[in-house]
Image (cartoon, rainbow, N blue to C red; front, side):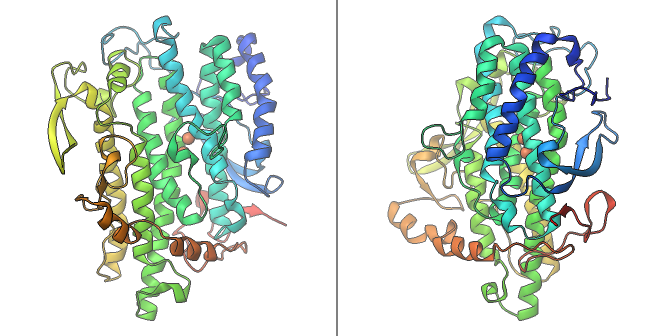
Amino acid sequence: MAGIDYSSLIPNNVSLHENRRLQRALEDWQPKFLEWWQDMGPLGFQAKETYLRTAVSVDAKGWAQFDYVRMPEYRWGIFLAEPEPGRQINFGDHKGQPAWQEVPGEYRGTLRRLIVTQGDTEPASVEQQRHLGRTCPSLYDLRNIFQVNVEEGRHLWAMVYLLDAHFGRDGREESEALLQRRSGDADKPRILGAFNEKTPDWLSFFMFCFFTDRDGKYQLASLAESGFDPLSRTCRFMLTEEAHHMFVGEAGIMRIVQRACELMREHKTDDLRKHGGIDLPTIQRYLNFHCSVSLDLFGSEISTNAANFYTLGLKGRFEETKKTDDHLLKQATYSVAELDGERIVTREEPALVSLNERLRDDYVADCARGLARWNEVIRKHGIDFELTLPHRAFHRAIGSFGEVRVSPDGRIIGQAEWDARHRDWLPTEDDKEYIQSLMRPVVEPGRFASWIAPPARGVNGLPVDFEYVRLA
Ligand SMILES: [Fe+2]
Ligand SMILES: [Fe+2]
């Protein structure tokens, strides 16, 4: 079961050949996916051989094989984590019942919406990043962004499999629509706000992988708890791929921070723009932006939808089964930060409607661990500067803080102060222009752009100067 059948047109570990109807539906979708990939996938590199990993097994040890592949020939397929024998629904009103192998009829619409919303983010990020190959800071980074892109493509396959296998004709229509929406398009935008933002440069890309892919991790982890077993198994395998995307983000920012510190010491100045580096205050402004738009992805602080998803057994909490409470939460409360006139206060709210906020808390704690590692690099260089997460109310568009102006340190402020100071807090036109000016391709093996340090090690035990993408 762990092994993947690569002999069929669509690689899979779900015995696709035994379900002819589903096989035909997916084989019908496959050329449309490839057409989308050619139109909206990485621009200018489709014919280049890239050193990529492909799943060969879904068990814990060694699931990947590395080799040169042209991206359109990547073996996208359907990989579910191993079934857990006797798995039950672990929370909500159906707690203790056997996990569903088919969609319960009354939850069809809700579940479909959850899957479509997740599925929509996957092609969106590929679209947002499609121009970046042309300005890569190194071949190593070029390979990494392509790895992320093909895996986001595979995540789309994962969600389309669920739609086609379990939602009949509606599911097939949704699968088509996932290929028709476009990030940032005025008429057919992607569903969630952050996935319609531009990813115009590599600093934004690394921030996106750190902050926005991490939202993905927390959403997938909650869906991995689902009582709908195929969704749970799909998300469990997706999480192993997501981990790599967050590594790319965290390590990328760390290397930019390291380079900034080296330049500061070498030239004894904070003004790195003369020396082709990205100064720490600019990094902080990009961080503030990407963190705040990613916080919005968790939704409103108080949400009856979130309560319903939980009570119905469709979407759990992060690490649901590790928690020791009753997994019903009907009596429980949770502290939620809220707006009270001109102040931000913390109140106890019913736990069920606070589930978005609870997931946001798990997420913020995870982000903070990454920042601590970046700050460790700064500290080791003896530099007196600390990167910080903006307050959760800063620059929010969704939820109760969407209606007020808040400083990164969590003070509610008036429009006048916002107008006077937002340039210190969010990327300015100047910042964007400067970062754009740094975006020149570096493609000689082992060489890196002026603004980023080389990684400590290469991919899959290979040297840093390996030819990760064959451009010749
Ligand atoms: Fe993804
Ligand atoms: Fe991802």
